[in-house]
Every structure is written in structure tokens, then in C-alpha cells.
Image (cartoon, rainbow, N blue to C red; front, side):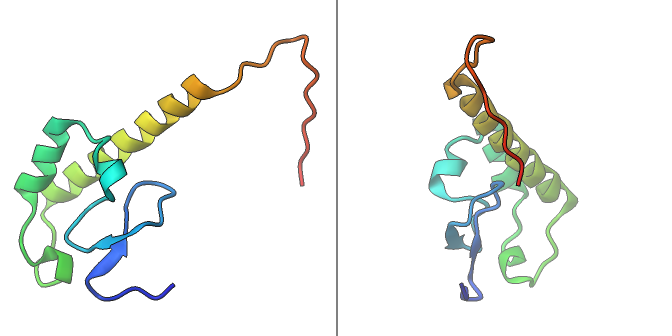
Length: 97
């Protein structure tokens, strides 16, 4: 898939949703970011960094990485909560390619 210069993909792990380059994540993943982290990301953003005109600040980079990690942890927790429990009595077949 070829993307325009002002478009990239969501930074959430495993997400390939194309989004405007001024955004860190797609709407569903951004909704999982805790509000204090959202504020940190937005306050540290420097206009022009999305086009490579300005280098992102260390504060923005740290906030963005924390937001990405928070989403990954939330998604992992959600996956664990919806996983089907396996009992010792259920036969389980493990296959490795």
C-alpha cells in the first residue's frame, strides 16, 4: 500500500490503519489512551514535526511511547478477559508449523 506524504499508519501495535500524519493513532486506539497521557502527547506536539520540518521533542517522544504502551497493555488485558478458559479436563492440541 502506497501512502501519501501526509498520511502514515496508526502507531498502535499491530494496527495498519492509515491516518493523517499529524495524528499518533487512529480514533479507536486513541480512545484507549488515558486522558492524562493524551494531554501530555498533545501539549508536547510541535507543529511541523509531522512533516519532518521540526524534530519531535524528547517530551513528545516519551509521551507517545507511553501512549503506545498504554494501548498495548489495555488491549492485552481486554484479550485476557475475553479468552476462553482452558480446564485440565479439556483436550488441547498444540500445533507448531
